[in-house]
Image (cartoon, rainbow, N blue to C red; front, side, top):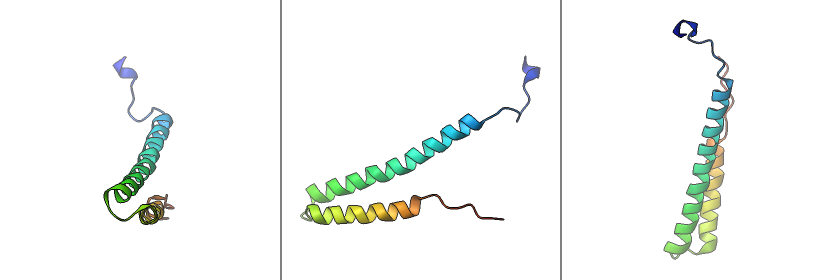
Length: 76
């Protein structure tokens, strides 16, 4: 049985797809949690108020989207 195994011949497309989805959800989920935390902390724990905390949260979210979006692969 052990002789039937040949390294590098297995189809790993499902593992690759699962990894890509996991990384995508981790990346965008982290941004969503960070934005929610900033909103709640600024709103309830500082005298900034709702509108200021919403503005800071929206700015952080836009910057996060720009930084985290997929970049095209560099052609070598």
